[in-house]
Amino acid sequence: VIKRVDPELLAHFSSENIDFYHMYFKWVTCLLLRQFSMKTCLRLFDTYLAIENNYFGFCLYILAAIILKYSKKFKKMGFEEMMIFQQNMPTKEWSEEDLATVIAEAYVYQSYFLK
Image (tube, rainbow, N blue to C red; front, side, top):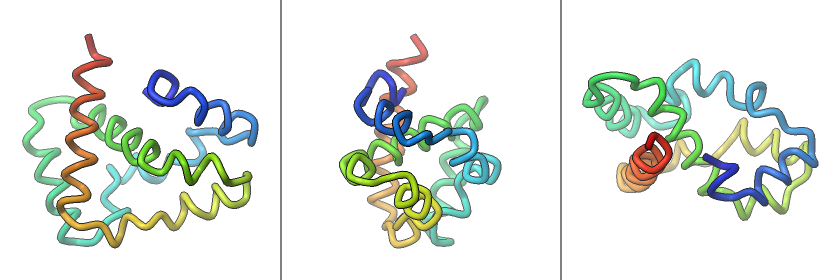
């Protein structure tokens, strides 16, 4: 998804030797629930429950939408800054509306790239 939506961001990650697997493993294993406040987590969990199958796959689209949301910021960072930022992303301060926007973007990516 990132390669197709923002190839410059992916090139920047590559130039800084950022490996998505290592960078976001803990996010995905927790279905992104640790990244948000409890209220926002409930909204995200509700989304996962509404998906009849492959909620884990949808989680990856949400992750891509979050990364792309911070694309401009990431492009200005070096390796250390990116590692620190991704460990402390400001998602805990997000409102339900912020999350709803990212979920909507994730649905768009999923519908576009699963064809």
